[in-house]
Image (cartoon, rainbow, N blue to C red; front, side, top):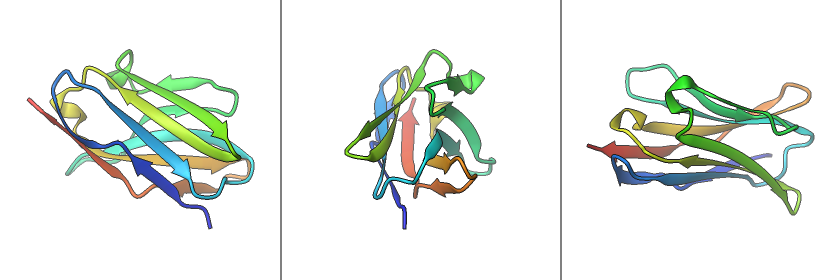
Amino acid sequence: QVQLVESGGGLVQAGGSLRLSCAASRSPFRVNNMAWYRQSPGKQRELVATISSGGRKEYADSVKDRFFISRERESAKNTVYLQMNSLKPEDTAVYYCNVDNIWGDEWWGQGTQVTVSS
């Protein structure tokens, strides 16, 4: 069974940076897209950034030019990162990584809390 393990969340002051990581405990077969979502209390989960198997990246308007998604394949494990710069209080949320394969199966991480203080 595939498990996605996230790390890197925490408390940071506005203007600071954090780097989130998400590694698969066992590499999902034929990984396609890798993405980060976030959910704030009382709000729906929203897509933050996604990166395709070919490296194409897309971002939510609210994080463009501040957040940067990347991925690497090392030892057959797929890892996705989210570099978050110039953080704002409104970026406070639980961040989830999401991975899918070419057959449409998908997996979610357990979530990591990011809190930005003003």
